[in-house]
Length: 118
Image (cartoon, rainbow, N blue to C red):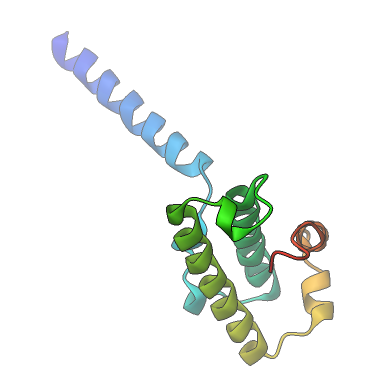
């Protein structure tokens, strides 16, 4: 009986871990630029980075309003965005390719929100 309880506990622990790890989504640090293959991959990667920049910025009106850690993280994000943009240019994809992706509208909204920041 004890072995059955242990097996059930282990099973639910594994399921819970799988659910929790899939819910968090990826972060910009998890993005492997070399693995971006199509227009929608690039769109999703940019959206992830843009959202993190917005989260760091918060209500800050300038970089001076951010903590040192947030400033460093922001710089890392900017470098990641530059790498993604460089890879996108090399890929030969056009803006029209990106516009066909389901998340492209969100990209435009995020870019608008980031005007003056990037």
